[in-house]
Amino acid sequence: MTRVAIVGVTGYGGAEAARLLLRRPDIEIVAATSSRLAGKTLRDGCAWLDSDLILSEFDPNVPADIFLLCQESGFAMEHVPDLLARGKRVIDFSADFRLIDLDDFRTYYKKEHTAPHLKGVYGLPELGDREEIASARLIANPGCHVTAAALALTPLVRAGLVNGIPVVDTKSGVSGAGRARKETDYLFAELDNGLKAYAVTGHRHTPELEQVAGVKVRLTPHLVPMPRGLHATVHAPVSATSAEEIRTVLRDAYQGEPFVRVVDAPPTTKQVLGTNRCDLWADYDARTGHAVLLSVIDNLGKGAAHQAVQSLNLMIGAPETTGIPVDAVWP
Ligand SMILES: NC(=O)c1ccc[n+]([C@@H]2O[C@H](COP(=O)([O-])OP(=O)(O)OC[C@H]3O[C@@H](n4cnc5c(N)ncnc54)[C@H](OP(=O)(O)O)[C@@H]3O)[C@@H](O)[C@H]2O)c1
Image 1 (cartoon, rainbow, N blue to C red):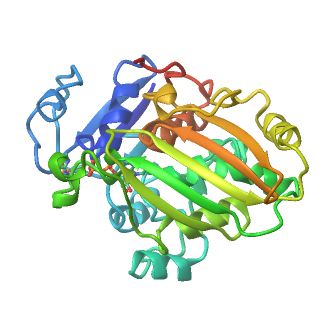
Image 2: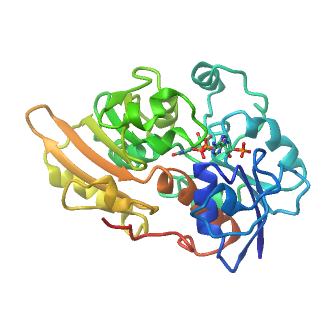
Image 3: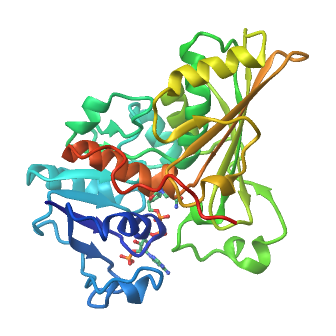
């Protein structure tokens, strides 16, 4: 039995992790924290989860083997040194331990890193090292835009096909901004029926994507009036000569992967809703010499909580797919 603490369980990411872990016979949730709702039940904070779990304040002393930190950037930097010193293992949902270059962290997150001596293992099994994830003390769970774009782009870079700066256009459902947001931008009346770009030239996921994919990128994200889902379109200048050549690179890269597949038609975010899947499609534009890569994920699935559970499974020696949805809800 693995004992887990979910820190920030009433947020979107934390609640989605709870949804996957609540009924697992091999997992005991020994703490589920909410500073706003301590003393109430999980059902009080998240009506869609049928659970009497009593919410509590964060306490590093609880007897958990693994802490899932589902909090804004800053929390992990503050608490991970102490948790690791206590022998705990951590999966951090925030960006605190994703970037290797701390100058990038300072530039994009506009603060100093307070635990620069600690490095996380990047928790993207399909592009990383599963053994490293399995033995990690600290997992840096990837960003959602990066997950979608990197899964599409990285195999082409690794195959030596990319010969310029890819343009990455991502579109995210509004849950990507979190449940705590109060700005008018996220009100239904202001968001619905419209579409806008944000952080147009300086999005925080830019250096993270460059680190994972191994190539400089031009990234602009967009906010889409849908609850969840993330769609990435990557326009990559390539030395390939056909769509089939590009598709073969992707198929070879993900052969046998349970959660990534190359599909035969441009995918919709809806076909991966509530799952840990990433569906990829590729074409080649011979006129401009670009690969056009389409990638869809659920920002709270493969983009956050399900991917964290995938790493957790590796960390505890469970089959990697245990308790993680593959099939979506439809329509
Ligand atoms: N959302 C995504 O798609 C996504 C994807 C990838 C990574 N991440 C990362 O995961 C971390 C957590 O993100 P998140 O989207 O889960 O954040 P969130 O929904 O905003 O929740 C974060 C915390 O905000 C607090 N909170 C304040 N007001 C709230 C309210 N009215 N309802 C619910 N919670 C409220 C809660 O803590 P208390 O109850 O203790 O106050 C909650 O745990 C962040 O670092 C984020 O960057 C998110």
